[in-house]
Image (cartoon, rainbow over the protein chains, first blue to last red):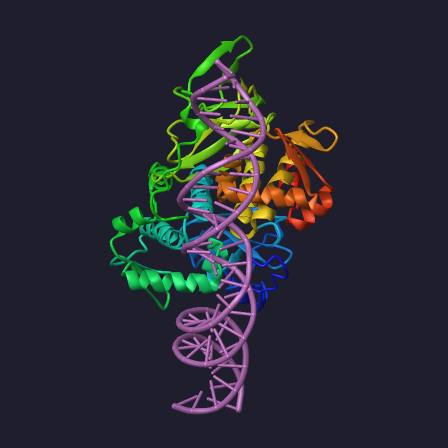
Length: 222
Length: 222
DNA sequence: CGACTTCTTGAACCGAGTCAAGAAGGGTGG
DNA sequence: CCACCCTTCTTGACTCGGTTCAAGAAGTCG
């Protein structure tokens, strides 16, 4: 948290590939490359993520980055104009397939759920330790992906670099790395080449102050 | 952040006075005492704060507390049922006067603004230092209260204890205290007996990575 | 004037950051 | 298929922002 010069090498994700839209095919499916900023030159629109992960992030003028949340396969994403990286913009973390969302049904519910995730995030950042933050987040992913049928035999694909974890959890990359080492040593999880398996979900939930309360109750009401 | 026994003496604000509603007078004005939890046994309702400050907070099972946001005079507050202190509930920080909000006009705008504040809060917690967090927050209060005509000669009333700052900014009370000492020594602010005066708003904004962007632009659109 | 919050301050400790450098992956082109 | 390059992951050593514990001073309210 040196207060001078937070000149991170710009997130590869943002730097290396131009935010270009690629190959729009029939059925109104839009594809983006990893690293693309998802904007709408046109009117605001609502899309559903068919595959891939998106995050919403802000970049401060001195280079510090904060990620606000993730959009997972099956989730919907509201794209509003006039949002740039110094306020908050959606960025593709992987190759993406988006589809225009047909009806607005469930929009209110999606908003509630998103708000609940944001509240949980505030608690993580404000009151949890590094280890708790990491576990808490992985448990959230577990529940969200499970609801979407994307958890198999207790494990799921997790296409995030440690830098992305750092920018989401408000920690440094180095400390994220060390935290993951500890969790592995604990036997809390297995994490390798883009997949995680959590050992004993309930015990971990207790250890990380994770409560499915808000998010999932609201989710079930859908 | 000790991972064991976060047994804070329960926030006086929560402990000392029972969350009782007091003296409902004509014109549908409701009063609460400081420390009251604002619930709705009835249907969800929307109220406008005539005077006093409210916060929304969650209390973890081990006693750690996190405050999500503040509702200032002039702001509206949506009260939904089924929210308790372990998820997120509004609590009166001072004596309060609430009024039933008449029309729903501006409800969408209020929600946008609240979301923008929450995003700023995430940045504070995730990426700013203690000094920056404090300044950033005081600047947000400045702008919000200024818009409500509650800033006089560059200063405003701020009825928050250091404990409340700590629970909002994700820091310890002791460190909040030391941070305020530093800001005073800097000449950044004058803060005494419930009032603040910020020296040179623009310079402080630069120092704290505060940008009125999101919040105020949306605000102005109203 | 008590009694209780709230604010301050000191000292010791530790979680997390920074700097730096090397190892391991993953694409790409020849 | 290998060589090269760039990104991502690891690890060590050191620093520092922030926490904890503790106790005393200053406010506030009945």
